[in-house]
Image (cartoon, rainbow, N blue to C red):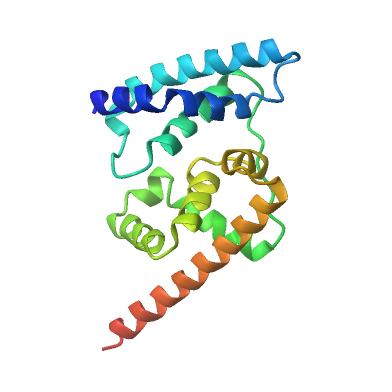
Length: 183
């Protein structure tokens, strides 16, 4: 798996550096300092990615996996992690439910992991991408917007809509399960 990660790093390093520039945009006082930070972060993240290469799932996007590692490196190296806020309580509850699927206690259940995977497969690629960034990578709306090339407000709106569609799919899946269970 390390060869796969190394190959992806070689192919995508330019794009990854651009993404990392966006992540450190507000951290350096001068453009030169920000550029240095981005290069340092690329180096550090590549090192960690190679160490964690056994955890890379080649069926998932490399870029998102790498950026999640970069975000964690940045979080550890600099200021703490800023949680994003979502306005609607029901969206917060549903988002928290999906986030629980990423924790070790919840993810230990094969059935729950399969359920979440099935849910994500029923969503559009755009919905999966924004939910991946928000839930798995735990990026705030500002960074999601930067990565997707959209405004932070647009990212929040897309996230809320994706959560709504995911909730509808989850409810539909639950109805199917309950109908099958009553037979």
